[in-house]
Length: 369
Image (cartoon, rainbow, N blue to C red; front, side, top):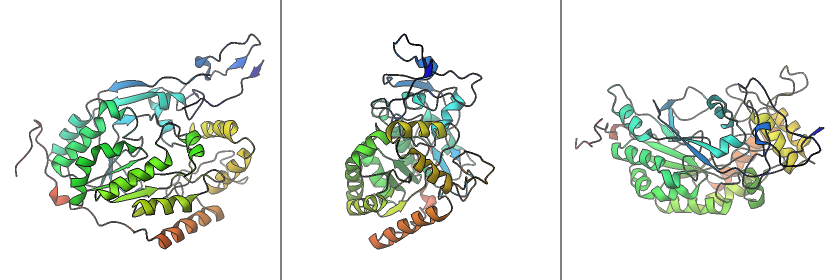
């Protein structure tokens, strides 16, 4: 018997249900010579699975951040898992805490926080609550496809607008345009911003890297629509993957022309189970350059032969995980900064006026004063 080769699954970022790190046993699909389909329970699949929504009653929804690498204090994520299926998503390993695979389960079994707006109202109404910079969709995309039917993100934005609570959104979905009626008035008060992620302008590459996200061209149209409605919009050119998406400058130029005024980037990082998932994806889509890509990623994170990390590709230390280190990281930094300076991207925006915040009433009624 021999291990079955991994082949791409149309419309999905991964092709297997890789075991999560808390499992006590791991199964490998093999060919026993009798033919037939690969077994899902063995970790492989030959067909794309349908998306399943799993309802969750959240006990809290505002997550506080203590990382010096991140420029916001709190965040909200209405969903766990993301149907966009981005193979590089650093959030994939979070599905392990749910007892699910960071592979196919992450993009086919979406956990929706049914009571997200209700719990948010309670947290904003707490007597000790102090408003701070809050971002919606920091872990998984708040405007992923299931949002069209469930509307959980809209319920969050509605409450933030009612209370005049400053917020930002980061997404790679055109679905954010649905909520222009809520975001634009908040932006006029200096209380709302949006960042749109565009990893590459290459539509074919985007299709295999982030199969169920909006096309690069559609995201540029979203940036234009946001800008035309007076909403400060930025572009995220993250993550930068050596020898895979190499058109950073073109993305920045296109985004600036569409109306983006700010930009940021990060380098590819592969925590926990994301490491084998990304290796598997490289083997399926870019087998001839896989070793070259992995060697450069290892260099970006300082995982050389003398490093005690062995074959690990990721350094999780603060100050290094987002930008990397070494000559390649410095080259990326210079490319990004010089391009932003040439195109006229702005620096940090002025801090929003927190005094405009009006706590909600726990009963759901608004306040006049």
